[in-house]
Image (cartoon, rainbow, N blue to C red; front, side):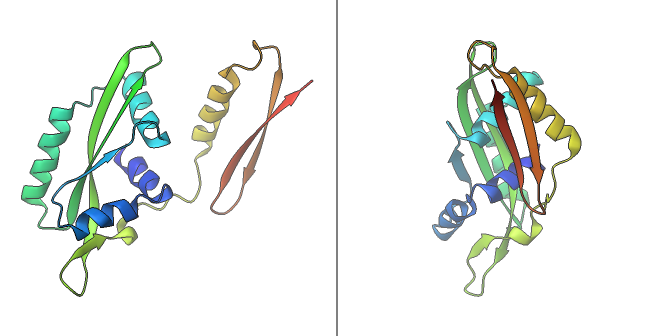
Length: 164
């Protein structure tokens, strides 16, 4: 899960926000991902796999990381609130160790070179996406859906076509 979150941070251009916190000498970075795809993914994962990401645990993990990392990582605590698939309110928080490097002036910045580089989505993830998209409502489930998958070197696109 941590690898996927780091990829999402990179993809959603949140590195700049983390760097802003580092410029202010923050020891822990906190991101509110409510209403974003990242927040949705964390809460969906927690709901689907019956995981509990408590704020208390996320804070404890962040503090432990600050004490032990020797400034090779900065803890990024991400939280989000949503309503899960069973209409229960869910608030999830998770701490991710974000790699940092020292700049020439002694300050820190995110070390993107240590982020996982996922160039291609595995076929099993694409299959899950299609299955979930197929279950999405469309005019009372009366419209037939066809999916076109476009794969390029660094991009993935799922195009949904409604056939009359």
